[in-house]
Length: 353
DNA sequence: CATCGATGTTGAG
DNA sequence: TCAACCTCGATGG
Image 1 (cartoon, rainbow, N blue to C red):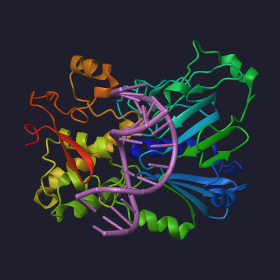
Image 2 (tube, rainbow, N blue to C red):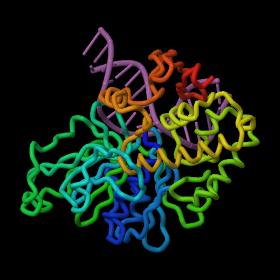
Image 3 (tube, chains in turn purple, blue, yellow):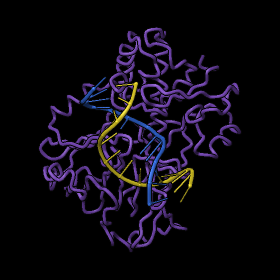
Image 4 (cartoon, rainbow, N blue to C red):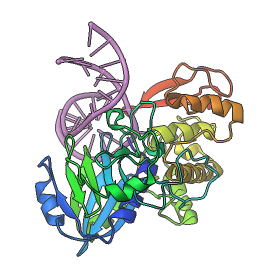
């Protein structure tokens, strides 16, 4: 259930802990045995995210393309820093700890899938557990059952424990395991997982709309503008169309439209250029915050009290997403949910009328 | 224990 | 338009 921000964070994890290292690749589940054999033993040379697509390059221009789809997730373990990054600037009130960001720790963490549980993936601070245990630092959606935070930090335990008990046994259906001496990444439930050459990668990227963290901001804005302005398709659908703009999913779609006070049914062709440009810029902003914090923080701008109350329950932390029947935070009108192209679309019929 | 649904995408009809 | 893909936590009995 990852949207663009999660994939960029995953790409960063690979960049930090796998790129430059020889990787043992396997498919514990067996369903990707052939592809894993192609990768096995090669050194990872690059890690990139474009929209919701992840591209990992190995020696000799061999690329692994992964799309997590709706179920997919990466679990990291070993000497993997859990940290939040500082690539994108924002005033985000990151709840993630920055204390763990500089030094790799013995942890496990999940990136990608999310659940409605109280604890969300990416924002859980990493903690260090004993030699034979691992703590979870998730990004995406950690499995509650596997989330066992240490009661207290034990810095020294890292060195003492080393990587004893590493690597952990694969749990559940692991399509691909990428293993270095110090870190391991398990992929489960992807909608796409394939080995491509550089041409194949370019073909995929060419079909994608601009990504604010990949494309030049001005050029990306123009590209999105061109792809929206002539379409007689509701903007609510265009924002989800990865060939129009990359990385937006169902949550960001609903929230971006509310933040713009825009009717999801308005046709792309009916929108003033400024409105379309505004959507691109707000997406850039939200994506940056999301990558920085690992959370989909879409309610900046709320006054402090309202924000505190809203953020208390993590299941109800948005303007409109999943708030069907609840009063609009701005005008009190009941939030509406309707199905569009098989996905649930939430909006305020008054604010976004 | 069975069933549902989820921050996605593809492809059949 | 809708099922299929694929995984697993939440939900309900």
